[in-house]
Length: 231
Image (cartoon, rainbow, N blue to C red; front, side, top):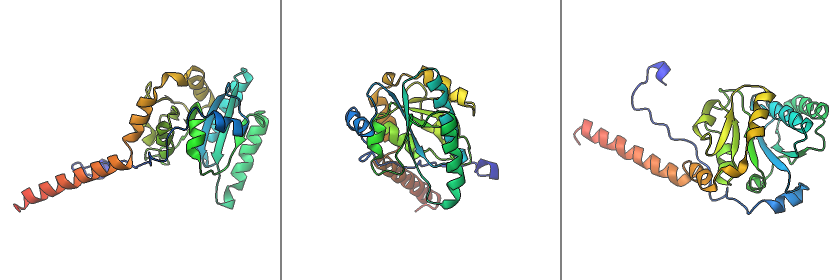
């Protein structure tokens, strides 16, 4: 807006998540058992489409690097596309999984209706989105993961930088390379992130907060309007 000359009265009201749905479900052990994942494994969760700007190829390659270094890790991918023209992209990713030797490491669950249970069962939620045009808004999945008590690793781009608080609710990687992401995962200790910090950050994007902010802005604009026209 500033680039096109609008300098004043800019108010940003962020998108919302349903914090009544995205809540932690215990320690996630039941969901892990259902998926055949040991409680000892580091569980990484990706949620999104197959498109290149989502950066999931970086995550797959990063997991491949970690497996070579004997990390006990599993990657859950909740993904899917409703359009047939993405089939070629899926085949590319399947081949990448094969070449990385991750057929038994990656668990594909498709599009699910119990995302909060997957988030609760995961140690890390990774949002490797790499195109600022595609992630201008704060990614909702990042906020939903935090609402469930799961810390986040995100590429430091676009709206993601307005959600994750480094050192408090997660961390960033800053190069579009598998190695950059791998180094962050290696140093990541999910136990250091407090649930209270994760949850309170997510609640800043709740429906209740949206209503409060929206009402406040309307009241302020109406007050300015009455003052200007001496109503």
